[in-house]
Length: 216
Image (cartoon, rainbow, N blue to C red; front, top):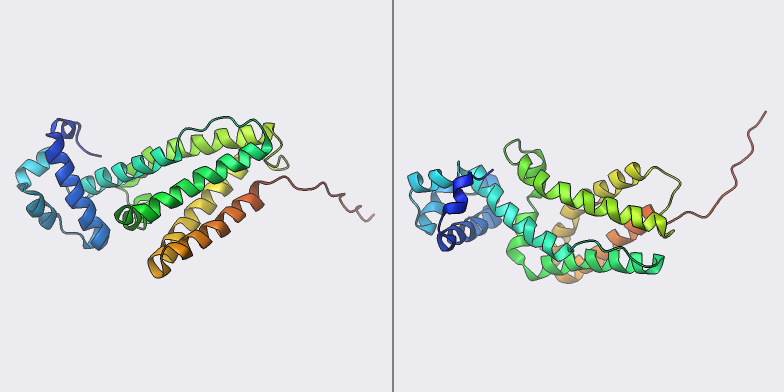
């Protein structure tokens, strides 16, 4: 993670460095990005940059952290809904606010396509955990409220629902961004509708079904 002293870097210079780095990582990915090229374009010497950041992976974590913070801001704090209909309306609004953010911020979208790296890279994993923790807590509270209102199924453990929900989200993020990269905004919007229907199928209450009698 960025050194604590990075917060003492002049805000304008810090933002310049992060903006240049974001463009480099978005264009070339983490492995293809050149740390030297970033520093040269941002006007930093290696010595000065190292004083504030430990290296390329540290700078990448800072860039991604900034991107994820903007994403979390779009998601917003969860507010307890008043009804089952309000629950699903709120969940849908928040999800498609994220989709709108991706369509508006092309560079952020390209950065997010590399998020799978963050989940598995040992030096970048902490950056993902700093985002994942609040995200998991957000969905956990949403599921709790949804169950109270009868908007979320109660026939399986809540922890299992949460795990499955996060798994679907992680598995479909890359797929959605690939749709956007290949065919643009209409494909992303259509894909998002399909993904949200998966969330509905997973979470919505099931009609009660009589279990078949056991054969003796």
